[in-house]
Image (tube, rainbow, N blue to C red):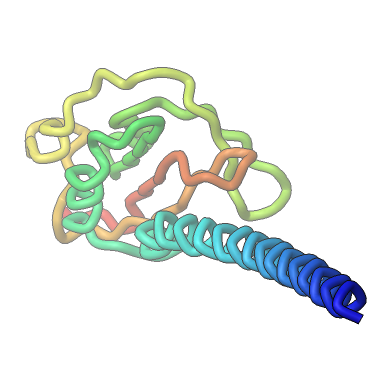
Length: 163
């Protein structure tokens, strides 16, 4: 009887140990899945926030002062270019990086970085130059993305001429 009691205690101990290990493994796998889901959600939120600063410029009309603010704000951004087309310079000038623009049938613009522009942002403030951005002028803004849907640039085209 003593041996049977000891055997039952050992068997119960082994069973409880196996049950405890199984519960720990199940909890670990569940926590791992939850962590992966949380990481993916965090990554999505981070991408949305990084792109949110460009929604102001997505097919909107902005003032010349907003154009110059964008030049200041994004001038040091890597792999990013800003094209400004003024009334006196309809061909435009790239600041930051020069982009190659591919315009498909849709209204979205896709582009890729072609190299660095050597235009001085200070030209946009010099009233004597064709690149001058009048703070009172109105500009149509467009966002340029690459094939991975990452914003690579902005294009501002003046719509009103200020004498």
